[in-house]
Length: 124
View (cartoon, rainbow, N blue to C red):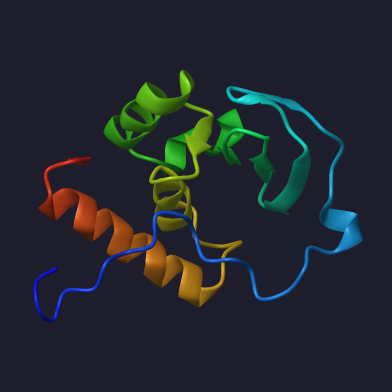
């Protein structure tokens, strides 16, 4: 690693507190299989995890907030413009739909996208 350059986390930072019971949702089908954890994050955005992977679901009425190229890039990894996988694509959701997310997570998303752009892995 180059001096002065910090590695960015592959996954969004863990929330500082456990999800509230009212935010938990029943399991749902995802591109990675049936969820074993499902949580409403706000604005209709849902976080899911499965035994193998996870990510975020963005309802169609919010698609207009995310640039077409960013949705298409994310769909390469999930097969759908509504699903954003947890390794990198989560940052797209947090960056372009910031309202339900804490400042720290928004800053992490911006850093993740900047790093991906600088490495030529994302150009939206």
